[in-house]
Image (cartoon, rainbow, N blue to C red):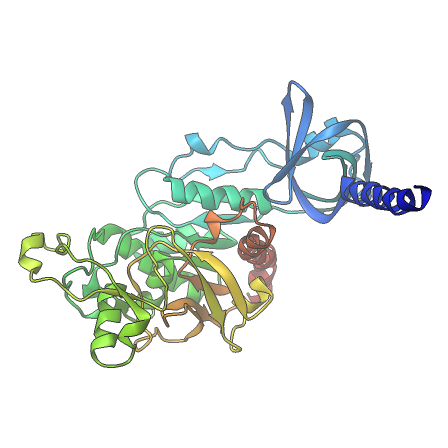
Length: 408
């Protein structure tokens, strides 16, 4: 009986040790965001998307000589988060926030027992390109990520000429262009075709192309997302695939993709296209497919392969493969007509361009997918990769004013 109990006791002891090993977590070099109050006491947001309550008597110490000695002085040092629901175009979000406090945080049983402030970093002003008359949800998600990882955010107004664009970008140290509607195919010498470009916004096309060219010309650190990546390509002389399923259907017809590797997308007529053509004019049905199990619309997820030529994306991801990105688009950069100075650095399994880099600049990256959708993911690896885009942008944004001054 005793002999049988000994292995059981060792097993029980092992479980206790393992349980205790998971009870303590240490996070190093994390950016602290805000301290908020609740019925159970103060809670800290940190590391971009995490939050945890403080233990009853946390140890707060400071290696920056900033006087951070308890939860109250820590809260004062961080500042107050802005209300993004009340944000308006033209406003600056994050003025209530102070410098970024970088710290080592120790948690026991899910509660913060120790915070050691190790550095304070300035918050650069990062602009989000104008997308509409009001600040939409996509823009808010980008702003939320930028604020949490250490920026102040300017919701940019529309620009219609070079002078307005120069004035708007002069106050920025970095910039993000969000997703949105299709660009006018006239910008790259085409007319819309069935299932092709819809929802054209001429004012935004002008504003985005001016902003892109100016950002590239002034080496302003930039991240172009979804429509933003498409704008990056078009503004520099490239073109777009107007409809990925139709494009892949044509690839099957010419023998470039085996039909066995595709799935037909039922066609009930194209939506009204630029110029107001009704759907019934687009019949008979069109051959539209998804290829190699990859769908790009409606928030579908798929992996991407990163090329050896990547300068920025490979650094962000940390490998040659990213197993899962969030996509929502039906257009993409045309691999046969890539903008001047741009390098294709990532593709989806079906060959669609997923990232472009302007490698002559310090940081100029366009991605067809949506990293802002994943910064709060419960999957640690997805959250890490998505956060990397904003952290890398901010690293260059903090250096940008210094470099700009030294170049004059």
